[in-house]
Structure formats: structure tokens, C-alpha cells
Image (cartoon, rainbow over all chains, first blue to last red; front, side):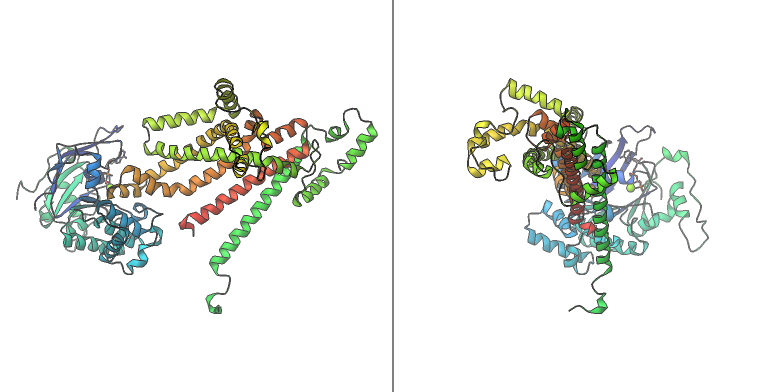
Amino acid sequence: MTEPLLEVENLRIRFAGNRTGRDAVRGVSFRVGREKLGIVGESGSGKSQTGRALLKLTPRSAQVTATRMRFRGEDLLTASERRMREIRGRSISMILQDPKFSLNPLMKVGEQIVEAYRVHHQADQKTARERALKMLEAVHIRDAERVFSLLPHEVSGGMGQRIMIAMMLIPEPDIIIADEPTSALDVTVRRQVLCVLNELVEARDTGLILISHDLNLVASFCDRILVMYSGRVLEEIEASNLRNARHPYTRALLDSLPRLDRHVDPLRVPQRDPSWLDGPVFGPEEGS
Amino acid sequence: MRVAAQGGYLTPRRRRRLRETLVAIASIGVTLLGLVALTFFIGRMLPLDPVIKIVGENAPQAAYDRVYRELGLDQPLIVQFLGYLKSAVTLDLGNSLTSGRPVLEDIGRVFPATIELATVAMVIGTGLGVPLGVLSAMYANSWIDHVVRTVCLIGYSAPNFWLGLMGLMIFYAGLGWVSGPGRIDFVYEYGFEQRTGLLLIDTIMAGNWDAFRNAVSHIVLPAAILAFSAMTYISRMTRSFMAAQLTQEYIITARVKGLSWRRTVWRHAFRNIAVQVLTVIALSYAFLLEGAVLTETVFAWPGFGRYLTSALLAGDMNAVVGCTLIIGIIFVTINLICDVLYRVLDPRTR
Ligand SMILES: Nc1ncnc2c1ncn2[C@@H]1O[C@H](COP(=O)(O)OP(=O)(O)OP(=O)(O)O)[C@@H](O)[C@H]1O
Ligand SMILES: [Mg+2]
């Protein structure tokens, strides 16, 4: 792992009025540097809330605690809202799931990109506009000039998500969190959008946290993988070492992936074991 | 030059527009027809005798019958209605039975007073209602929100005429901060030329500042009371529109970029409620014109509302029906304007 940018230790998120007795996120720990970290887990396992907590943008009813949550050594837990505004976008940014909802429907997409740049950089309208056009080209949008003045409903999902990527990367953050960036898109454009993201992240040496429920996809894009279940990290493992995963849940996920060498029952759902809820965490350092 | 192959004049899009426009016009026509019918028949069912109004209580039977026939009351109701409809189309709403002048002329004379009152009230109501509604949604469940909601609850449940009487008692009779009933003191009334009928504007145009100040001190209280109920409605609606926007994903996007909460709300969310808010303001204007009826009576404001009240009390059927029709037309027109605004201002419908 490269020099860590973000260190999280024992992150907990509790929602006021939650009566299930189990918090949404329960003691998650990880570190990220200028690398690609994948977080996989089923719906409701706490992936999004973990991502939001890093930006301190969890819903008002959420109560976030941790023994440590630092960005480049700076404590985020005690950081003021004003300081967080400087960090958001400029240092840590986030790509949301569905461009249909995550872009302001009444603002030209170009203006939205320009705004993202100007929040953090002193630049006049013209310079910012040029930067935005360059950024649109960087996400492989042809005729950026025309796209600049379109409204979100006038662009396709794939293009919308590339615009989102352009907008979130234009201030050149150190870390970008991509929360299921392709699950709202047409299957045919998913890979293309991910490739654009991957290309930019690698070229700028930005740290990436890719959140997904698709183990296959995360394994092919990321260096390291966190497997989450019910608010906890069950296993942390190098992507290259995934075959040797030891946690039964990870194994079950692996076994349900389509394979060439043997038949996989496509309708089999991994069996859950109540002991996973509070059982041991499988880290990369122990074993192999 | 148009090329025939391009599809000629009626492209599918234009055809759709045309159809929508025709449907809109037809529905306005039907609404207005229904309105005339409703007001007419209600007018005929009121236990008022227009003949006695004209000939007096003790008139001989012969005179009574003559007027009865002159007014066409011996005809079947449907014939009377068609006759009324025919003259209504030519903007003839009949003569007022009390003033003897055409109803439309009477209304034209009292209307500026009401327009002035309602407009001032709307400006105040909007100026306070929109920001308060936004703030209340922006800081939901904070003390600001609770104060705004409590004030709105009071405005919602306290009747206008009661507020009017209280206001007069406190600010006019008690503290003497404002002038009492009427639009302007008698001494100023003829000191300037009434060009528009809107006294605030007429006094400014005449450069008569004393008269202007006097007119202001007269309008402040009734306008504030009407504005209060407009504000209640506008801020309540604005709050709920805004609250709905603030749960949207693009709000998170704006925050992720590093925008402050205030900027997120005003720059991003507000755009998305602007058209809805405008519609509410337009509708509240219509309600204000209507709400003026009671307020004008309390404040002896010589406008449309007081005209209608006194016509009602005097049993002046033509005037009552005419006034009702005018209110209806205003509502229909404002609704129509709202529809058009929606289409013109929201780029997604283009
Ligand atoms: N606003 C909220 N109020 C109460 N509970 C919430 C709220 N948002 C999320 N939760 C709870 O937090 C838990 C984790 O949610 P989260 O959105 O992080 O899941 P996720 O892993 O991102 O799932 P998905 O794949 O569906 O996006 C869920 O079980 C949910 O019940
Ligand atoms: Mg999620």
C-alpha cells in the first residue's frame, strides 16, 4: 500500500430511531492511499453510509463515531464545517449513482462543472469554462462545446455519468469515492464509463474508492477489496489474491460468479450464517 | 423557401402544440360558460325580489307587473339565461339596481382600490413568505422552523376580519400609528389628479408627498393583514416545495463539490422550485382579491369587496351576479397564466 491518505478506524454509524438494535455501520476500519480500493457488499450493508461519512455528509439523523478518521493526518471528526467545505471536492470527492438524479435538472451541465472548479480555484468565468471544456474532452466527449450548454435531461445516462466524473475530478481531488457509478447505467456503457474513470484516476494518481455490489467488477478494477456485510468488514484482501479468500461469505460470493471451468447454479443464493454478524474479521496480514 | 419534403407547415410538433392550444381554449370557454350559468341560476334562486327593489314596497300591482315584464321575469328561466348570456358576451352585465349605472362601469370604478390593496399585500406577502418558507425548510426542526410554522398556524386559523378589528383597535385607536378606515383623508382627496385610480401612484405622479404619506398610512394596516394570510399560504407551500427538493440527490452533489448549505439551497434548490412558487404567488393573488371582500368591509375600503358586500345586502342581483362573474374570470385568467408560465419557464417542457 502507498502512503495512506485516509485512515479510518472503528467507524460506527447509528441512525436515530433505529430499533433493530444493530447500527448501520459497526466498527469499519481501513486505509487508502493513491490506489484503488473496492468495497463490495449486498444492499444495506453500509457501503454508501461509510462513503458519505468520509465527507461528513451523512443524513442528519445519523450519528457518526470512530476512534480515528483522518485525512493526511488531519482529524476529520473534529474538523469544522468550514474546513470540511475546503476538503469536499478539493481533497475528497464523490461520484453518485445515477446522473439522472445527481445533476441539477435546471442547470446547464457545463455550468455545473464550472461551479465545481470555481468553488476551489480562483478563476474567472472564461478560464473556468476552458478548463471545463478540456475536462469534457478528457472524459471522451466529442463536441464538448455543444454538450457544455445542454441540460441534464438532454444527455444520455452514459454521457451524464462521464459529465459527473468530469465535474468531480476537475478540482483535482486526492481521493475520489465512486458509489456504484455504473449500476444505473445501460449494461453496454458500463465498462466504457469505468474505463474513462480508471484512465483519469491513473493518469492523475488519484486514490479511488469504488463501491459496488459486483465482486467481479471490483476485482477487475481495484487493487484491494473490502467485503462488507451488515455494517462490518468481513474480509480485506488483495484483488490478485481473491482466489484464496478465506471468509465463507467471500467464498460464497466467488462461487456464485459465472465461471468457465464449471457449471454455476445461477439461482443459488449464498447461505447466510448468523455468526458472520459478529464473527472474526479476515485481514490480509494474518495467514498466507 | 420551404422544401415540401421537410413535412410542410404542420410538423408533428406544431400539430401537437396546436391541439394543446385548442383544448386549452375550449376548456376555458366551457369553464366560463359554466361560471355564468352557475352565478345566474344562484342569482335567480336568491330570495330577493328585484321588482320591489325598483318599484318600492307599496307600489300598486299594475306597476309591479309592468316592471316584472320589463325585466323579462315572466319568461321561462332558460330564455332569461340565454338573454343574459347574450348580453354578457357583449360585456353587458345589466344595470345595478341601486346605482342605476351599468354594473361593469361600477366595477371598473371600484376596482383600482382593490387592485392597489391586493398588490401591496401580495408584495409584502411574497417578500416575507418566500424567504421564510425557504429558511424554514433549510433549517427544518430548528427554532426558525418552529417559529415560522407557529406564525403560519396563527395566520391560518385567525379570521381576517378579526385580525382587522384587532389591528384597528391596537394600531389606530390605541397607538395611533396608522390612519383609520378609508383610502385617504378627505382633505387630500381632491389635491391631485386621479389618473390610474391607484392612489399611491397618482399621488407620486402629482408630486403630492403629503397625500402620498397619508395614502400609505391608510393602506398599511389592511394590506398588512391581507399580506399576513398570503404570507402564511406562500411560506407553507414554499416550505414543502423546498423540503421535497432538499432530499434530492443533486443536493448531495452540490455539497460534495464543497458548496455551503446556504449556497446549495439558494443556487441549486431554489431554481427548481421557482416555477412552483410563482404559481402559488399567482394563485394567492387571486385569493387576495377574494379575501379583500371582508377586509374591505372592516376598513371601509371603497373597493370591489365592499361593492359586492353592499350589493348583496341591498339585494342588487345584477351587481352580485356580475361581481361573481368577474371574480371567476380573474381566477380562470390567473390559472391560465400559471399554465403558460409553467410551459415557458421550465426548460424541460420545451
Ligand atoms: N436516512 C436513513 N435513515 C435511517 N436509516 C438509514 C438511512 N440511510 C441508510 N440507512 C440504513 O443504513 C444501512 C446502510 O445503508 P447504505 O445506504 O450504506 O447501504 P448500501 O450498502 O449502500 O446499500 P445499497 O447497495 O442498497 O446502496 C441500511 O441498512 C439502512 O437501513
Ligand atoms: Mg448505496
